[in-house]
Amino acid sequence: MLGGFVAGSGALLIKGGLTVMLGIGADQLSWSSLIDPTRLGHWMPGLGYALLMAFSARRWPSWQTIPAMLLFGIGSFHLLLALGGGTLQTATTAGLLPDLPAEQLSRQLVPAAASGPVAWGQLLRFLPDMIATAFLASLGMLLNSSAIEVTVRRELDFNRDLKVVGLANLLAALVGSPAGFHSLSSTTLPERMGARGRMVGVLAALVCLMAWLGDRGCWARSPSR
Image (cartoon, rainbow, N blue to C red; front, side, top):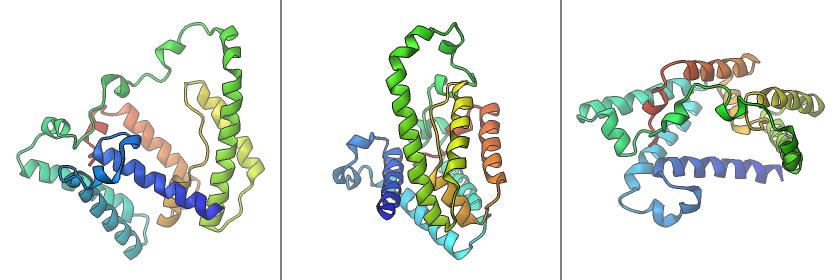
């Protein structure tokens, strides 16, 4: 069962990457959209880059390999764009760079709708949804934790993890964050890179914080294809 779960998680990651490169919804992804001659140039370079990254990670098993490959990919894209006489605007129009609406680049921590008084009476209407969300988050955490155990070959303390995830979700809800739990891919990647300390999560959070506080256009300069 765990093998099927891990394989399904990998399939979802592949599907998500293809939808981003093709610029279509998940429900529109099909073999016809993949073999469309006008769209081959959208996802084939991404496939080649993924294979190159997988080969590099196996050939040079170091924590520096994947970050170096990410910088190499972004740098190569902008170098080729400059050599071809293109600009950020033309790349965005062509769908090579993400076109993010202004509201998605906002630095506002708490949504404006949550700044007013809370209608506590209305929350009772959503009580079934809250219970379902808590149940699904707990189930997802247990499934991902079991898969992580198999991947890293180490036992986890499920009772402790459930408490930590519950507390983290309560704190994150204060700023309007959705429910979250263990991530199989985000845990497996540092494991493969040889980074196994607690600082991995701290550094990941700091990178997100710097991206949020820094230049709002940094996201728009990351290639989507």
